[in-house]
Amino acid sequence: MKIAIIRLSAMGDIFHMLWHINYIRQAYPDARIDFFVDSRFYFLLEGLVWFDNVYSLPLKKSPLKALKQIKNLKKTYDISIDYQGRIKSAFIANYLSSNSYGYAKNGLREKLAFHFYKNHCDCEYLENVYKRSLELSKFALKDLKIKEIKSSDVLIYNEEKTNALLEKIKPFIKDDFILLHNGSSKINKMLPLEKLISICSNSDFKFLLAWGNEYELNRAKEIALKCSNAIVLPKISLSELVFLSKYAKLIIGNDSGTTHIAVVLNRPNITFLNESDKKPASRLISPFDIQHYFYKFSDVDTKEVVKIIEKVVNN
Image 1: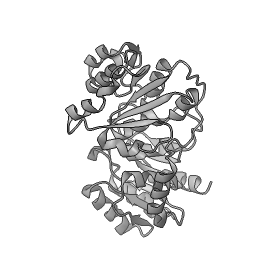
Image 2: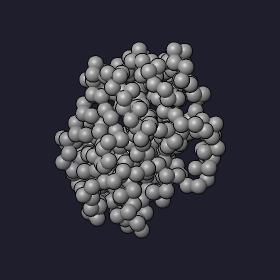
Image 3: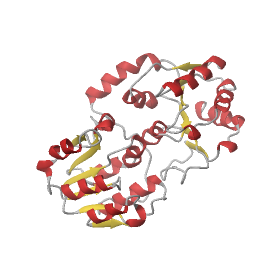
Image 4: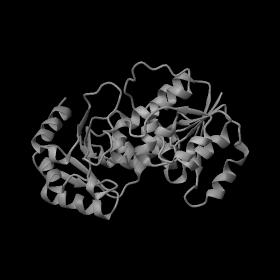
């Protein structure tokens, strides 16, 4: 059996699909499972043990080149599953298989995508993101029988990639640490700096401050300036950040792709959301006690956060 998985972007959304990939492979151990992703996010999937092939498509830079890459794959898959729900991803799903699966119209942002699917999963667009991906998997893959999902690290790479990344992060993992992501895709999704400073300054643990751009770097520097237990990380790749997250005692951050790393790694996390979020990106798997969500910035009591930190790190 040949299964094509389409989830082109972005980082957090790719993680939303990956969180139960081990169960798909377990249900289909002998299947060829290929993943189709935008070239910008290929690094996340390269070397993952679950897939036979990962296709890197330069859709942003050169859509025609992307089509040439899959030219010989037309209608060669038994099943194609589009977790993206956009017109371009739906087109790819239709191109790869005569038996394409996607969301029904109530689950699509781009309604025209509906017409490229042969099979339609009825799951609302505003539904929990993890539930959406799981429901589509169960709808398309009949042998996927799941009553309860047990948590596990699904970002397992081949030996070559694992060894290379471990070598790069070795200087940072000598002592126990908490990984703090202070940024997000939008400023209004970032917890106010004074609250982050209060959390760090009232905790006795070592914080490593990750950042992705100049604005986040300046925020990290300000935290470190006022908190002696906080260290600003140098510029590291997202692949290195994934491996660094594997060794963190706790991952703290806003609602962002980097914070979703904690979900697919099964690491304890504290995530700060705000009123603008559609639905909490909480998980549907056990155990539930390793994830802690604050749904409004105004509800974030820094003393309560520090208590959670102490409980998790000392556990």
